[in-house]
Length: 68
Image (cartoon, rainbow, N blue to C red):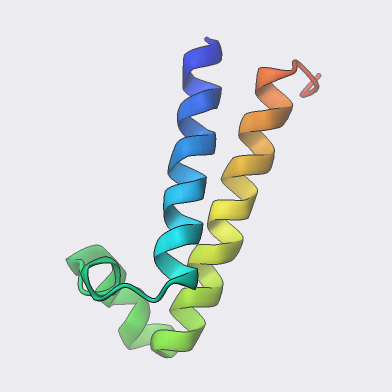
């Protein structure tokens, strides 16, 4: 089960890095394009940064068994 929480942390860090570094390959992904059309590029970067941070926090909380 701990593997899944570490996976959350990894995916969260991936999302944060792609958003903060403003990588073309990250923003040109068809799934990201939906958010780019809705929120604009800057809004999408903020969204993915917050989403990634949430995944990292959730992963750490689960890994250290603090979810309850």
